[in-house]
Image (cartoon, rainbow, N blue to C red; front, side):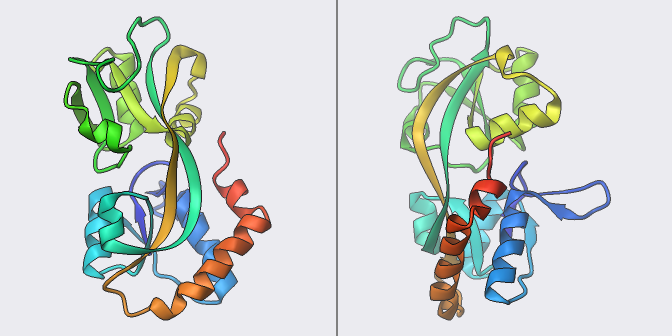
Length: 215
């Protein structure tokens, strides 16, 4: 199992322990199917490459043309909204397709935010390692806006002790789906029915809602 090294999905604590929402998800999934997973933390793009090569068997990723080529969709796990954020006192039009033309927009390197963002060549896209860096750049005026999932945005603000009132938000994409994928190069396709049943159990018993709740 691979977790993207992006807050809040996956990270290491000060003591070196793996933590994050995906780490918790994998741990509970492991208990339900009675099998031990070896969970690894990887940069986002490397997760996709290793899923494609079969170096990792399973990963939770946003649905995209790239992930569909690399893996077989096992089960939907989470739905997020993709947000555009600017400073509360800015007068920018927070929209894609021309609204931010010529402006700088920070985004987490390797993350898929939908086709509208992928195809918008009118904006200057600034890749960052994590959303904390993007928020700090926005507060310092180094970028004009940022794009992020609601999960990443509100979790990062909570971690930083910042209130949402400091920002102005718009919805760039109403629904972006994240799903559990099995590598097309994996030999463990026998696990797919069991994994699907386990994810559905987590949906019914409230585990998914608890793990991926917005702060």
